[in-house]
Length: 222
Image (cartoon, helix red, strand yellow):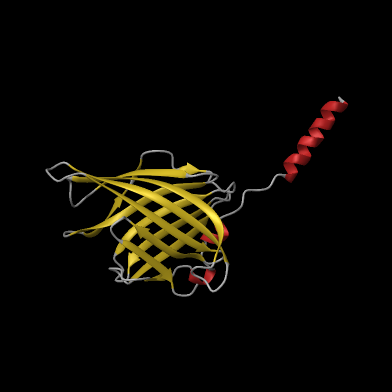
């Protein structure tokens, strides 16, 4: 009995000393003064669009799940992309939805919602993968599958700041497969993306390179 009690005590001490998973939320959530407002990103270099706008909506549930919803727009407020993520107390993340927009002559801009093809919840301890299918609305003969592998880490960055700054970095590689039911040729595009989040500030930089074109955007006030 003494041995059992001793082993139980050791297990209890070890469990109390276990480090909690590092929280990424302080890097993701924008400051209070920016809630319900547009965040403006300016292009670095010669990009087709000189400005990109973004909004972030934050909600909290009773079980401590934090939901982040993003809307990305062109500077003329034309929507580009929308996504929703759930972040859990154990620092796992679930991609709830992902959409892009296309223009329809009859109804204006319509949302094309992705259909998840695999697991969309990950504990972020290693690389994680999302795969979504999209069916174009204005072009019924066209569909798209995106397969993305992500890696998330923390880093001290000084390349876009005046000094070393505590940041979270999200790297991703995406294979986009465009498929057609007519005589158009199926196409696969591979692109890499970098997103940098400053602690207590949120997203401050993002870039994309598809092998043909490279774009980068940075918030005005870092």
